[in-house]
Image 1 (tube, rainbow, N blue to C red):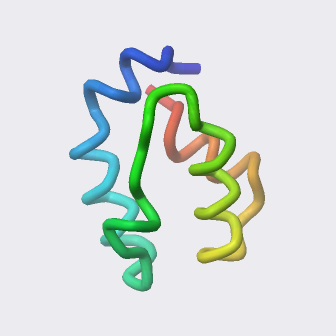
Image 2 (image 1 turned 180 degrees about the vertical axis):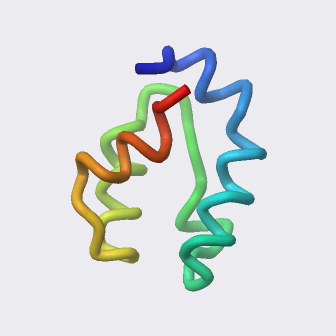
Length: 62
């Protein structure tokens, strides 16, 4: 699993991939603040209907 620092460093690239896969996501949905990973995952879960595990793999896999 990637560290928070790695997630923060790659976040712009990740946002692009998520928007490509889930076109309904907005910049507000993808607002990331350090230490608020659980809130982000919750928003993504609600918006995409995907499981938390799948989203974690998308975000934190290397």
